[in-house]
Image (cartoon, rainbow, N blue to C red; front, side, top):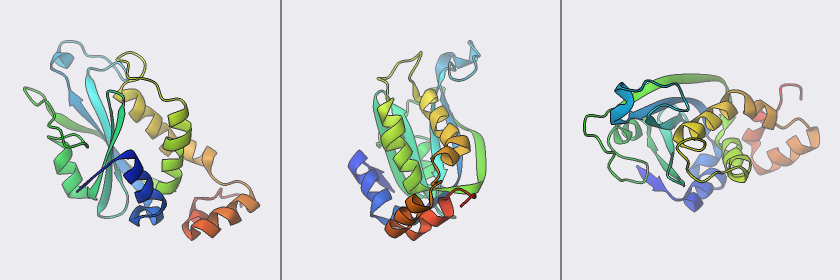
Length: 185
């Protein structure tokens, strides 16, 4: 298991072992708050902390969560990351577990894989440009998870390379970008 700072995450995705990996699926997790049993609300106003574990290949995973105003990340073997996230946040701090639990909510297997590099570009540019200070009402971990899932479901296609010259430039950097191009090319 490796906890990643923002710079380490960027290095992992752009020049490290993660640069050729594809996101093949993900699972959304909720860490419930004590009062959630008394006030059942729907996302993003639920009384829980949300985070994602991205499945990068058959054995690798990336844990991502927004806590207060920071992006936290951890990379490792899928089983180890999943086990870790049950009691600890990506930064290594213990989750507050008194009468609370971590629950896997939804798991998705992607038919069209997204490159980790493409996903990081979304986080680093689009998401960072609209990053909001933590707010329980308008910018909490649930909003963060919804934004990530939106990109993985729909936004990746909007960000796909649609121009032949752009595709050739992307392939010059990483040949695997060919597989993330628009099907129209």
